[in-house]
Each structure stands twice: as structure tokens, then as C-alpha cells.
Image (cartoon, rainbow, N blue to C red; front, side, top):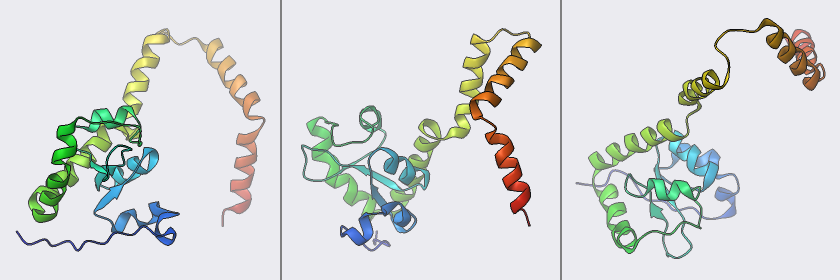
Length: 168
């Protein structure tokens, strides 16, 4: 297959100081921590730098959990098989647009499963339901509401006034 994607590698400060602004135009993203998460949210092919290898490692189903356990940082170490297969996997993605599209979907799927807040609401709710009594205690709700207002020191009211003044 003919490669439909041109290859550009940008490493100057002009392009790397605020690199998240360029994620939309990238096909591959080298990221750690939050940068990895942001690239995944945009369905990019994700790579992770590693300290003991010359090239960043393509993150796929086989090595995602290991890289995740180190927050996709240089601290992660992979077995030799991952290192040996890395460049050929990247070349395969560059040469095969169908495989590239599949990996875009896989990256986004990992984003949804591991990073997306939308899926976390149900998890938090289930934990909350386990630790909270099932019947509602009105006095407890009032106490929590008053504590919340006190801790925020009127922030809610300040924001409400700010909203009313600035809405036009």
C-alpha cells in the first residue's frame, strides 16, 4: 500500500513548548502522563519514551498496561521482544492505512476505558452506594451542605454574582 501520510518530525522549541496545541495535526504523538492521555483522547497513534532505548515505543494492546503502570514515562522498561518489534510495527502502520485506522480506533478505545471521566461516574457512584447508607438521612444532607458552603466561603455566591453581572 502507498503511504498516504507524509512524515514530519518536529523537535524545535517552537513546536514542543506547547505541543498539545499541535496534537490535532499529528498522526503519531510521543507523550508521557497527561500528554499521553490528551493524544489518546484525539485517537492518535501513541508512543512513549523509554530511557533504555533509542526510539520511543509504540504503545499497543501488548504493552499498554506496563506503560500505564509507569504513567507512560521514561521509567518504563519492556522486554526485548517489544524493543525488537517496535520499528517494524511503526513501519507497518505507516505503510498500511487500514491497519493505521484500526490502531486509531484502538487508541481511542483505550482512552475511553482508562482515562475518560464519563465512564468514571458509574464507578464512583457504585463505590459511594456501598459506603453510604441506603436510606437518606435529611439531617446528614443538611450538615454536608452547610459544611460545603462553609468550606467554599461563599464562592458559589461570588460566582453567581459574577455570572449575573457579566451575562449579556
